[in-house]
Image 1 (spheres, rainbow, N blue to C red):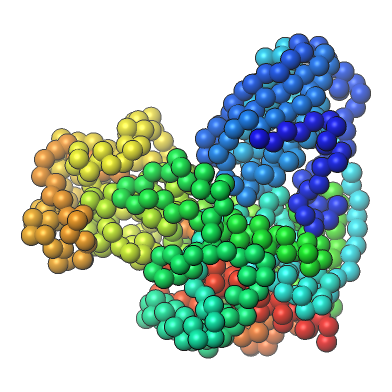
Image 2 (image 1 turned 90 degrees about the horizontal axis):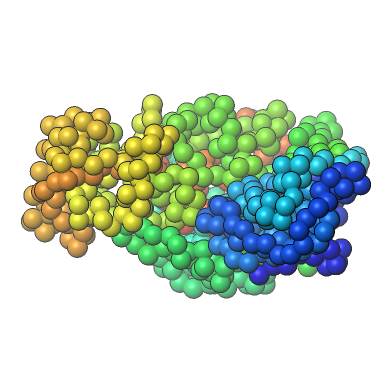
Length: 610
């Protein structure tokens, strides 16, 4: 439980190491006495309420005296661990301090923020107050332009950014880490499996596995770049252990950061068709890195998005961040871009990854590609091939906990077909990133139809809800039920003879006990010969778009002629195309961010100190 009162609000500390100018966007400085007076007349007491958040409800209590809110307590919740904490530490405190429900939400945690505000509003109404009037109370924001001087500025406080900042600081650089959102590293919370070589003896095995899994018919991966990561891996392992990295051996022999208690709790309501949900440790890893930033003297500025680059001649000299709190200028001789992809910018997706324009993305809300655009303006080259990084196939594309899983939502006993009704891949593929390639469509989201009979459909615990949402015209969810396969084909808009023949062929494989077409495990081969039949669209959820700006082996951003832009570096997904081939095979993103961030931080610090 989390309790915020007038007495302890003043003494509360924010995220360790975050600069005073950062934190909650538009931090309240108090409301006018006139506005506060409008809210007088509460019935003293403690009231309880709940409101829907990202994953389930937030339950809280609010205590009033005759004229004000004096206490707010979070009673129960199961919101995304690693994200919700900032909401609970800021919104109740700001409501109490300002006596307003017009406080800003925490960027990056919008749904949980609104859940807290809405539940408090419910309590206000129960106490006889005017919640609508309290939402309209204006909160002034102190605006002040500021200029700072650093050796290295890292843009983006995700996994790559934190590793970059920490290593640059360990190399003796004075480091600022600027982040446009109000929470740290949300993308990695849905990750938790990584390639790594704990000792020098493990380097060759890591390299061999990486190259084997980076399936390619194109020019990538660049083996020299992969080799560099693997050679640095024992150092990176030591670096991670120093920041409290705890792990176990997980899927396919890869290492998994140990999941926190909060992440284990988050997993409880997740239901998948044929797999138990994976409790990922990305959030616990991020918490260790966050503490390491503070311990190494990294200044972290939240809600501080970069809007301009500062160039002196052709060399980087810093960044400018135009914020509601004023213009913040950060001068530095090294700038490292760790700002993720551009999946939230449709125009950039259309330009650089047109095959992804209709796909559904779960990339961070702040990943709008601003820094990539600024780098291009500064002369950076981009990779000609920009590639969607697929995640799981999910019936509910807005259900973030489900979409964050490495396993598909459909039961493996189903028959998975494309938009034309054809089966092209095994349903229990050991790597669902492979499946994405078979369902890409130039005019529609990448998705496949899960065809089921009654017995298989009962394994989808939300089937009735999916059918109801479809009936009510949900914009994305499509689930249908029909007595015959021909009737189902009409509902899902595929050729009836094609779907029927595919099902006949599939049933024959099931009866033989061997999937000679695609190799699905025999335990999942269940004939489906009697209606009713179900068809549910399973969307391939895009985690990010790999590619970004071109870099050399030192992670320096380069121009079209191959020459570096002095002082400009990029790591993580911001420059990622050279590390896998035809498709993202999974388990490499954490390795790319940790290893690439570590090396970029070391190089950026050396440049700044030269």
